[in-house]
Length: 322
Image (cartoon, rainbow, N blue to C red; front, side, top):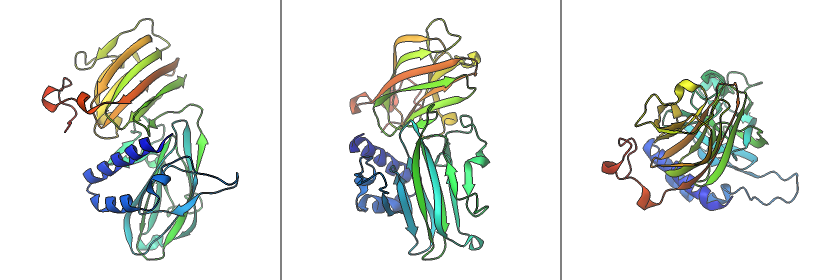
């Protein structure tokens, strides 16, 4: 994947930090040496045993397997690193060389997903684990709290260190996931297929850009015909069927707090498309577990001229577009 989409992704993250009141970190991120190389998966390796290494920053984004070391030069009381992999991967995290004082209030916590603006991805409705099991706290149990494995292609680490020279090393390794579920896209354009084989769960594909989504194929075990139901016209929609696809739009990452744009609960072989002018656009597959359900779709970034004006938004002004 090229550097450009990842640069776009980083700019979106910086925008979110501004909204979260963390603007003080943005200059450090933008000025960091080798910023764009950090976002490239095309790291050159001299051999299979090569391990990419670099310092970890108090606020960071990591997209490459490797070893990242943080050493505090002063008290660091609110630090976090966002980790992202390819859609078909999950993330393994391991702490080593930990030098912190848990009794003084230091902590290192790993999270199965992302937290942005107080919202969590995946939402508690879409994740298989209860929220408390998604946190791994090193201080609570150093023996078992040193490792964590995500359920999807994003993970996160929070840490607070009160003393200079405190620190730790974080090892990141990405693993193949045969049935990806709850994906955060790194790119504003592409295509994907989600499959749920007899699993009672929900899967979301989150695209943190305003995009046009084209559903190219939908197979629901019970379905026999096709019909697209815009939510603004039919609020009862497909939720009673147990197996359906819905399109969501919003400006956060928690799918349970997003606006339902449309749903589809009948098999589709053809093309259904919709433009969603939000910071976050989501394709969500809901499955009863009784069938093998599959949805294929394409997505592309909306041009500036395609973004809806606030006063002209046909979807009840649910997204504010400047």
